[in-house]
Amino acid sequence: GINAEYGAAPEPKKEKEPEKAPEVTGPVNEKSVAPRLGLARVLGLANKDIEGRKSLYNEVIELESGLHDPYIELGELCRGTMEAVDVYDKFPFSDNLTFDDAYIYGEMVQILMKLEKYDDPRLEKSLIGYGTVMGWNSLDSYVKKLENAFKTKLLRVVYCAVNKKSAEDSDVQQFFKVKTLVIFFIAVLP
Image (cartoon, rainbow, N blue to C red):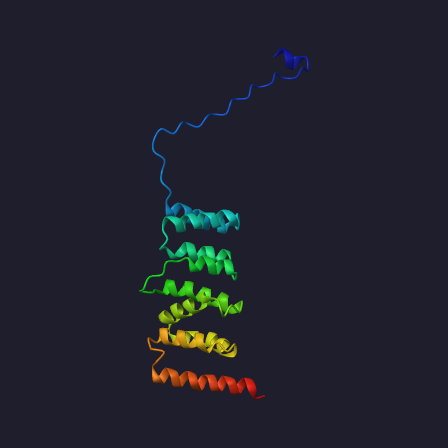
């Protein structure tokens, strides 16, 4: 055109107006577990938006409280803290414990023992849950630490629950009487 011949600026193009989203006319989908859990995992792969991931995991927990994965994955976001113990402690354990239950209990035990929270009531519950599924011998390293911290009463309760014995059982009483004496002499004698 003429403008190009005389060096004039080309006429500005008219900007298109942004297209409007179509109006929603049907019902909105209800919140569901799989998309929220999936999105939280994808954000984890990108190592982004920790608070957003926590929110998504909490929504999944509200929708389906008996699902292990959101508790485990949310607990991992809070790794090694009392916040993680709080998350794990919200799980609704049943009477028939599974290996997934043992994993959650084991995480609680590990954190509470590392932070030396020996008097936290969740430690007893967690030791019993973990030991019930995995066996008394799985608690060996924790037992030694608790013996050194003179937590004999706690150990007796856990031992009896895991091994399904009464605290009044004569073998249990004798076992812990000897343990208490041994711990006492170890502590007193150089």
